[in-house]
Length: 321
Length: 247
Image (tube, rainbow over all chains, first blue to last red; front, side, top):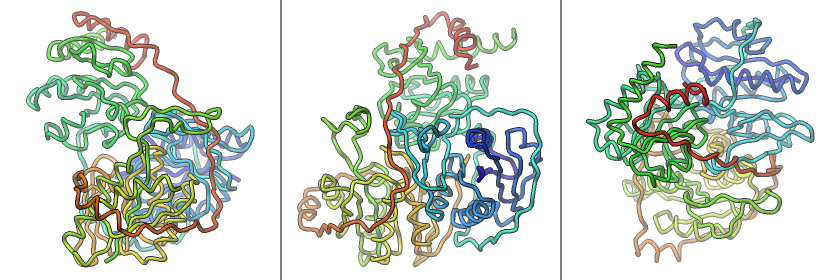
């Protein structure tokens, strides 16, 4: 019995969402009175032993370069085999792009109950129940896992990473790696930007900004905050901003510490993509904008005046701090 | 060329979310049901476009649900598709549902299985991956573009911080999201034709559900917005820094 945590990497670097998964998995192991181990696939440049500070005692590594691209079928077969040989009874993933594809396959392969999109530690007082977000963040469900082996994928930005002292033993894992049936022919990463789903702060603009030529004030604010930029659906549809920035029900769902909405009225479909944010600030000149009802802080005012002042005020605060 | 499109019944995106029976059941009172938007706008419409390009293709729809799902299936058939299969159960465990779809898939021998990227009620994003595993096919998740060249598919999919292009030989399972196709509205001819399209009801195969919902919970109501005057942004910065500790 142990907890196995899948460590997702990209270009040799461990993803932030995986550090959350490691902390979460280590806490699950503590709850169950067992050990937490990690598994990483592909070639990694980072010092894996240092990940011990998140609470894992051992990291299994399959440093096969063929695993640098995520193939859900190959990954699931490797992780399932590792879980079985290491005697893992709980397998933890981040509910990110990789986790969504791989956790489901692992669960089906091992006939293990899956809670996808978990947001809290399991309740083990009577069975094994995990809280997860449902109805696009408008509610939670407590889901019992009935099988002996359990798979949990953790919503990004919903569990705080805790680093303490510790070093993990890194062990090469001998496991069958099948030839992937999917061939990756091109990878196009958006560089120089904070990835939207991993960002601590998101600055988002809507139709209230009146046109793509006015985005400068928003970009300045985002830069000052080290924030990712996002937009509402009409803005994405009108090609004022790239499609991948669209947050909402049918776009990207985000859960940052701080979401700043500028000139977005807050349609229910938009809220479904942002309502897991911890703090929401709304800047809108319409005091009746529905977004104010979902906000923690608000300014009723003209974005073109308020936003540059906000950027300057943050600059000033940082200079003073 | 046979395409299987998985469709699910979900509450309309503007539905008020509430629960009954001691927070163990979703309150269906006054709820408008729709086809899960990802299933309809992206996967079904893309399948219809593939059939328009290759009229010899057949499209089957599958839903796992009780008789309440039939109006949704008829609506989907009004958009397109040749026939529908409903697996008669209201179990909500992802593995149970995936096992039913996998059984339909094995019986039908499909070249292509489309799902939406997730349903807007349970948000698990897990059915496609589970079905792929159960039918032992490759799985391409979160696809934004899909093209066919003979029996090879070229798919663009979302990855962390970008996208990648993949090539795969059929059969394959693909989960679809924005970018795959544009929303369509069923026309009168489609609606009339849908009435006579076959809708087969099959009983579920015996599978153990691996999860069950114990209860639901609504998030605590927001304390209410704190408004700051537009000429006092320094106060907002102070609140965000000292009170919310967000910057």
